[in-house]
Length: 492
Image (cartoon, rainbow, N blue to C red; front, side, top):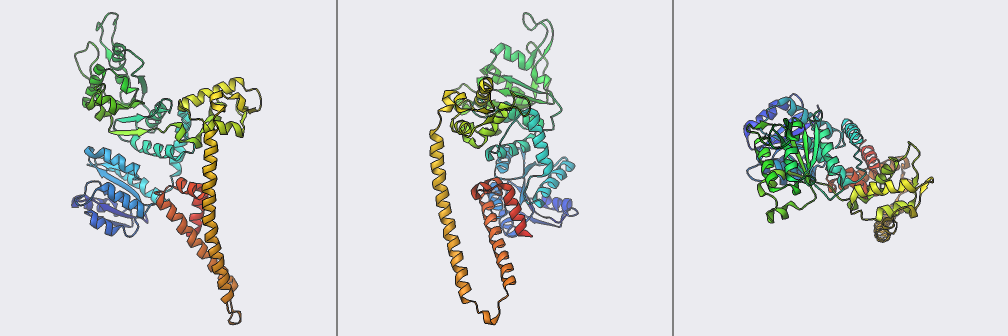
C-alpha cells in the first residue's frame, strides 16, 4: 500500500512493534518518541498518524490539533489507556479517526481499524462508500431522520465510533430531540446489534415498580410474587439497556444502578445470590445533572460513572436546515406512497421560523394534525397551528442578515476580480507581438494558474473546516459534491 505512517509514542518498544507490524503493509513507517520529534516529522504529510495521548513534553490533544490544522486529510488514531478514555473521546470530537486502548489484545481487530483509517486517508478523507451505505440502511430501519445538519452528521460519526467500545454513554438533550432513537442507532451499529435492546423510563414508574422492572424478583419476595421474574438487566444480557430520564431515579435506585455499573452484578428483589450481567448501559436525561448533584438529588459517584462519554443532541431550532426535510418525512407517514401533499414556500418558511420547544416530537405531532385536515394537493399556511403559522420574525431577520452577508462577500469578490482583470489588461498592453506570442500556450498556462489558485482556495477552506467538505461548501455557497469534483479536477 502506497501510504506513509507516523508513530508517536514515548515507549521505544511500542514504536518498534508498529514498525514490524506495518512494514509489510505500507510504504514507509516513521517513529517519534516525543512532541518535538513529531512536529519535526509532520512538516511533511503522512496518510496516518498513530498518536499516544500521553507524551513527555506535550499533550497528545494539542499535537492532534496541530496535525489536523497542517494536514486536514491525514487520519489520526489515538492510543490510550482506559483511564484516559474521556480524552480519547475528545480526540474523536477534534477529528481523530478512532482511538485504540492499550494493551492491544486483539491484533486482528487492530489491523482492521488501521486498514480502515488508511483506506479513508487514501480516499482523501471522504467517507467510505460501505460506511455511508450501512449508515443509510440502519437509519432507515430505526426511523432516524438526520437531515443535512453538520451538527447531526458530526454527532452520528462520533456515535458510530463509540458504538464499537464497551463503555457507558450519557445522551443529553431537550425533550423530544430523539434521545432514544440515537440510543437505538448506537446499538444497531455496535457489536451487540444482534442482541436485545430494551428501554425503561426511570421517571414513569414508582420506585418499587422500577426496582422490580430493572432487577426482577424471586418467588415470594413480596405479596403476589408467585414466581421468579427476570428484570430487564438480565433480559438485556449481551445487549443494550436504555435508561431514559435517569435524573428522575430515586436515591435507592441510584445506589443499585451504581453497583451494577461498578461490579457488573445485580441482585433480584428478595434474592441472596448476585447475578452477573453483561449489559451495556446508555442513559439519557434532559435535566442538568450537575445541578442535581449540587442539590444532593443525584449521587455524585453515579454521575461520574455515567458521564464517561456524553453525546449532546442539538435542539431543532439549532438545525433549522433540517426542518423542511423532517416535516416532509413525517407528513409522508400519513399517506400512501406518492400521495402526500406538497409543502408551499410559505409553509416551509413558517415551519423553519418556529422555535419548536417540543423539538422533533412536536414537529411530528404538528404534521399529523396537518395530515388530518389537509384535503388538497398542497399544504396551506392556514392549515398550520396558529403558533406556527404566525412565526415570521426570524425569517425576516435571517433574510436581512443573509442578504447583507452576501452583499459584503460579493463586494470582496468583485474587488479581487477587478484587480485580476486590470492586471491582465496591463499585461496585454505590454505584449510585443512582433517578437511573437503563442496564444494557445498562454491560454493553457493561464488555465493551469487558475487551477492552482482554485486548489489553494479550496484547501485553505478545508484547513479552516478541519477537513469537512460540508462546512467548506457552506462557506463557498456550493455543495460538497461540487467541491470534491473541483478539488480532484485541479489535482489532475
